[in-house]
Amino acid sequence: MSRPLNVGITCFPTFGGSGMIATEIGLAMAERGHRVHFIARDLPVRLHSSRLKVLFHEVTESTYPALQQSGTYTIALASRMVEVARYERLDVVHVHYAVPHATAAWMAREVLGDAGPRVVTTLHGTDTTLVGRDPSYLPVTRHSILKSDVVTTPSAYLREATRVGFDLPAEFPIRVLYNFVDTERFAPRRDREALRAVFPDLQAGEPVLVHVSNFRAVKRVEDVVSVFTEVHRRRPCRLLMIGDGPERSPAERHVRKLGLDARAVFLGKQEHFAELLAASDVFLLPSEQESFGLAALEALSCGVPVVASAVGGVPELVVHGRTGFLAPVGDVAAMADAVLALVEDPGRWAQVSAAARTHVLEHFRREPAIERYEALYRKLAGHT
Ligand code: GMT
Image 1: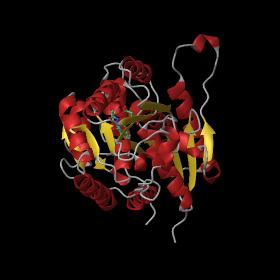
Image 2: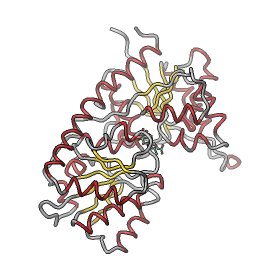
Image 3: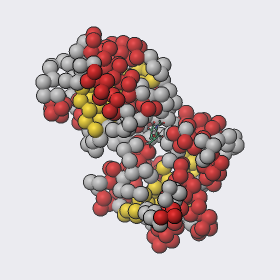
Image 4: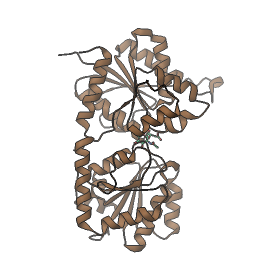
């Protein structure tokens, strides 16, 4: 049997999907007997309750006054990677989100030379489509991507967007490794107990629309509220908002102004929301841009149909008319019609719900995805 691997993982410790996927990979690797080291600014969210399975190396920046505002995080991270790689003999460092993690990994490799760990960079979205393309980051981000041993994206869409956006040579390999979901945790569950804790006066048959995100402008949270408003006008329903970010307060104000605050609940950041998701009726994701849409995948896994905008990698998981419905960005009327078509026809809803779950089980299960990462790490480490 091959020896266990020493794997370093770097991600943002925030509520974003990239941090969630990174954490799930790390925990699964640890469960398979590998030694896993998270190297990050803070403890990633989903590690809070499972910390003992992995090792955590905090990245701290110098507070020397002359360094204020000078952004030394990348150097601090690279230095920590060097230290951990040397003393823990890392085989692989897997960085999630290129800016600035791929750059820190490249810097660490420059210091460590050929004895250093192999570098896997997983691009997640705005690191390719927005931030990484900013002229103030582009040349170094592009170089860092090219210097990675393996580059992966969670969707075919993002692979092409990366190729075009960074003007990468046609022969430069980028591997699509789809994001995945724990289909046992995110499973169908139609009893509404969890929802009653949030909406104590929920009536039988009253649909619940749900949205989970980091409430940034790219999510078009105002469209979530508009779809809810339009559906509610035609059939009373509820809105459940999970997550937090800059667009949360404006959305809450909008709901209050409409006089719908008794019908909507903004829960804020929640670590455990699978039960709530599973008890809801339709998941809304009207984003401007989305390389994948991890929260939508979690909804589909719970058998909850998704109504989303047809952007980026979303059509790779939401199959229009089968596992949910897609509409052009900003087409609130079409999205509201799609929601009503589902909630007013229980037979149709059940059909789409079952297809959603089947689609996830066939294409996005956690175990096969983890096996692919493990095989990749082993190959890079020279294990047979
Ligand atoms: O790129 C971002 O804006 C943040 C990033 C994150 O850290 O969660 O989200 C991206 O990665 C997720 C996980 O792969 C995807 O599910 C999201 O679709 C993607 N966000 C965007 O493309 C806007």
